[in-house]
Image 1: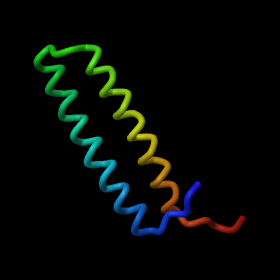
Image 2: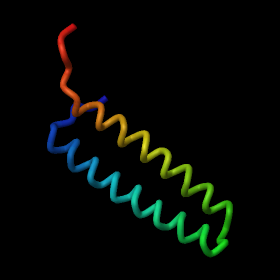
Image 3: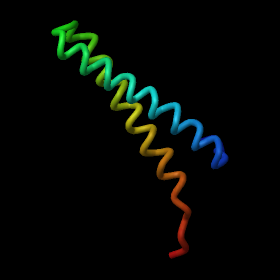
Length: 67
């Protein structure tokens, strides 16, 4: 895995969160309008992937504590 600087993590998190919010809005809009279920499932899968990536990056921001 690549080494991330704290500023790179912060920038990447902001980008992923923005994409997650955009997908959330799109999925909500699609559900309200009864749009393509297959496309909705694809978007939900991508949103879940983003959530996982966000969680991993957030865990990198937690400093290691000695045991």
